[in-house]
Length: 454
Ligand SMILES: *[C@@H]1O[C@H](CO)[C@@H](O)[C@H](O)[C@H]1NC(C)=O
Image 1 (cartoon, rainbow, N blue to C red):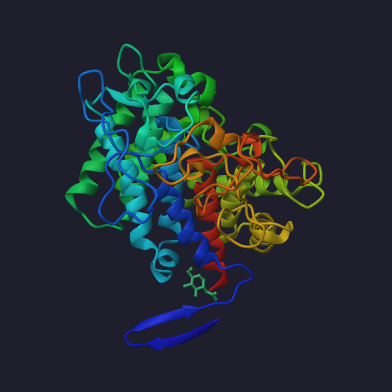
Image 2: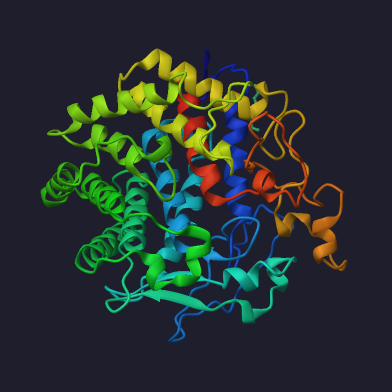
């Protein structure tokens, strides 16, 4: 580590095997490429323009903005909110890394692009839009979001009659976590995030139902298993953002009563199951249960590292054949925060570094578009696959063996099969798709590695 006094600023230069700064920079560009709605003058993705400008609620509410989910153009509220919560967590924990690498403003912009939309979608205390776009109709279209037929854009909400506890709670968590990224500045925007987060938490607590029952179109894509984890997760985030006792008491009570100190199903930490995340968050914020939660997180990371857990021969943690990299990255993020909290610091850090380095090139290739050697050329992603105008974009663009026309910088793809084989083919979406949630824990883990390197 070399520190130079440069004017009035310290410039920290550090030499790591992979350039973490470059990855943070590009990962944020990936989120920028996923933006829906009217793009600001500073848009850094030259092949993207305004899109879905007529996204509206059932009563004409403005629902433009937010993020497209993956290679497609649906705005799925549940994974979108989770991705924002997770991204915000990395920014809150590793704020100094974002500042010193010069990415703080980009990171805040990425979070705010998400919460601006979530605030709009929360049209009344007990009404929240949770999806724009029909998944089935949307998936029949291969083209640019800018050219999308507007008939594909129905909007779906949850309300008192048809509630969505998990969706409302996750959205509350995203707002509360993002408010913390502004680091204590008491701006009207931060106050607004807190107000909406509390209302949504109240809505989630009072009217309980799995959201995909109320928004059945989400079921095929993002079916939720339980809302217990989101209720605790949201209460912890609101407590962290406000310091109000009733939220931590609520979270601690439910955590004990519902037994959420158990290992998560198949060790996965994901948009569906937040157990491992809320256990780590409990360590960070709870005076009463933090100590016990430390043991829980210690057990989680050691179960993950155990030789009874599935690994590829190349050393990748393999928790799911669909997009294994995001599960490995999410767990790496948890175990790096555990490392920072003094939980088996050395082994957890070394383990997590190996997982992330597998993705960055140690496996013989990079799994991050536009980064490193042999990076994916054909991510399953419509807008970057489309040729420049005025050429047409359609299913032939998807089927073409050519690389995507534009480089979707920073996107983490799904990943290899159990034999460490990866097909860089656009129509192999099990391996080559990208998504908001894939990059979120991944980016936090990279920020944590940079933190440990300095
Ligand atoms: C790492 O990447 C950043 C951003 O792309 C760049 O400015 C920097 O020079 C790179 N550092 C090294 C050591 O190559």
